Image 1 (cartoon, one colour):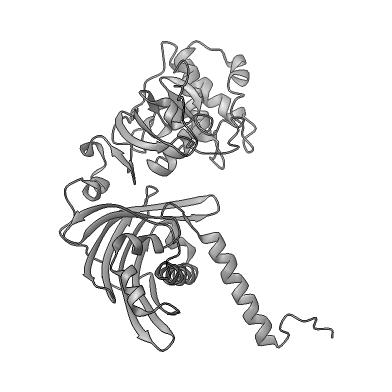
Image 2 (tube, helix red, strand yellow):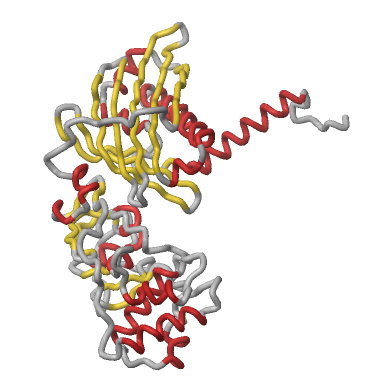
Length: 407
């Protein structure tokens, strides 16, 4: 890319139509003018191999190829790469067929924590692609645009020099092009070709089809949830929210309704954020019962990192003297990183999310704005809230009520 596209007369909040190719897959969608290419690759397309470090173009972690040139994706707005060819670290190779650079980094132990590795791989590829005859003495200077806090660089230089010596006529090209845009869906756009997706994802992202049914695993779920909340709003107003699928989705923290598939089927995603760990479960929901006082649904979704969530959810609204009692119960089956938080922690977070959902339903029933659908549910914020509650319980159980125990 000789120079980024200039987008004129556009404010930061405007949506801009963008078309480009990522790892050989055509992409066509609308994106906020202020969204960086790094954020689009990670959050919209699920290509989390591109890491984000300083977000100032200094550390080099987010390096990708734009039209064959190494570029800092944190410094480029996605709307500026319209018509470009983007190559990310996922395209170099896969575990069954590594690119020579990946194999050499592994053999020379050119990584420790691994956070800088994608940036070094892409920068090294760009260097050897443009200067295949580079000498070892020049590598330290040429690779200084990527920072590492672990290795001391010596093993990285050994790895790159090894590949350079074996490929003086030119480094082999990416070996894993195609099928690398894992999801490629946003509320306002989609990738160009469904047959280029991996089969596990394509089955849930086809524009015209949905699964015949959602089958939950047998056995004990990862989490059982049963939460009852008292709402101030009358049953009639709460029923108005429950009967409107768009309002209902906006009330669940991190949830986003993407598309209606017909016959009670919907496509959507749920985002969770735990500090630097961000999960986006894309999938389908089937409404078995959808009434003003009763919602019964099955859902399943995949996270690009390999996680999977399946759930049976039931929501009932019952009138009482104070307003409405909202009961939410769920059986949740988790696989992947979120399941690794542990049953107790995952259960606490999920239960608190349902409590926030009830509060959002109550606010929406009163005519207030619910949480924007694009916001991620912050697990860190929820954990702080849970910690505060537990500390309060400990104070009450000890009889101190927060007072100085010396008094």
